Length: 78
Image (cartoon, rainbow, N blue to C red; front, side, top):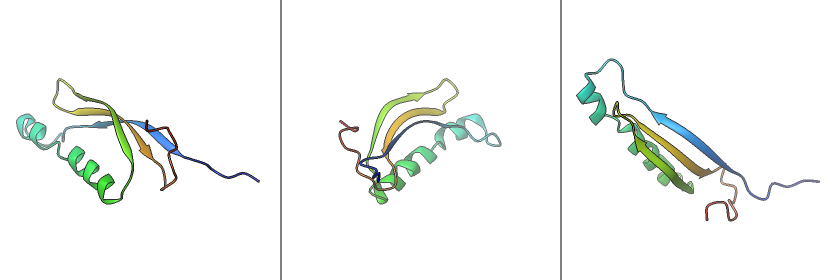
């Protein structure tokens, strides 16, 4: 018999600019990132942002470790 002791993900996510909006407005509108973090807070998802970069075009690239399906993360987040 096997049992999952802990499960977490490491992801690289690119929050890209909207293509149908003027560039300056698109840079200001990369609020999807803030909404993503707020959703994880609401869901009580444990996460750790490893790296966050604002790229030349104004988009945001993050590397994130996060809890998967409410499983315990053990010492992965340390």
